[in-house]
Image (cartoon, rainbow, N blue to C red; front, side, top):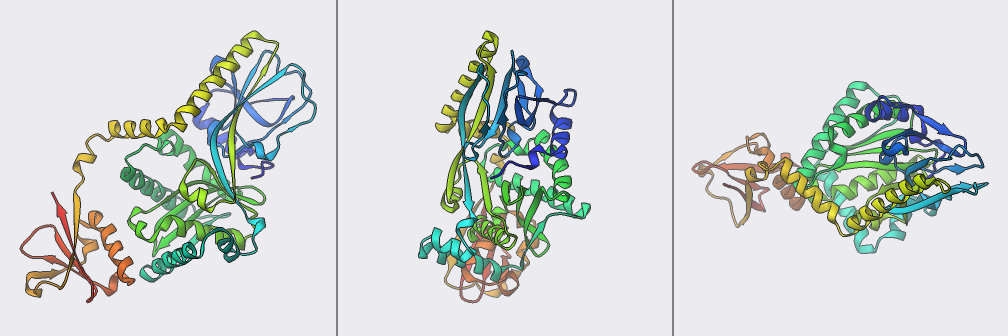
Length: 413
């Protein structure tokens, strides 16, 4: 990923971030450090604008002395981009802390998406990916749209609001808290994304089933890179491996639009590891005046704090913590969840015992939708080509049939 002309250095990003997180503080710049702006935070430490809501920073050190008696905290530095240090001041110290892995695909290595797939995955995996895509397209009316550049505000609001709906659904299933869904962060994203999209510094990539989004990716753009910032898919379509299908469709867009790097950014997920051609690190840098005892104490104090955070993260303590906070926040929600029992039937019961229904329009549709879509995956047919029934004499029992395969779906109390 490049950092020249990144979205995070634009006036738009920094102005909106200031409004949401440091409303009454001023933005400052320093001659000795080019490429970043700062604000004065706790303990009189200067933090980069955007803090950890950026997806990559770099800077250039110059031989000026306006760092004296100061400490600077910089998040999300990408060491593989070779931060330039032209004339390093003698009394300037830098402490570096590796925090998160990052993953990207260098598209310069491939001519087409088929070339990428051939050189990245085994024959068996490529066959599975094609199967998922074909089945999804066969069972649903799938289309994709990249919201990039001029955009209708009403359409933007609809997509962004549905974005949150899908995130809530996804993380409710995972039973874990997700920082980007916190009200302060989400209100920032919703306000900053629209102007950045219009400036072509961001985009929303949307996969639709008819008019309904089933996968949404919020991206940042540099001159030749696309950075995946937040991705979510509708878990009801998970049987179709919708996460991989979404990434392949986004990758296809990248090839069509001469994007050189698809950057999955920070955080480990199996799909990132499998799809990427390069793994890199996100570092936190603490820059300080070595001649100032107070500055050294602050710098090493913060450095040790971030080393501890990285250690705990490597032990998956952060995941346990986010699961704990989710249980505290939604302690009554998990108790209300009902279980589903799926039974394969050799044949349909007598039709006089059944009522034909549109199962997706019943009051139980939110519970049943995923299981209906799982059935569509098995029979490789759209919903309008199968039959759905409800057993007249019993509550909460439904049957799906395509004439050959019959599944009974029972809601357990």
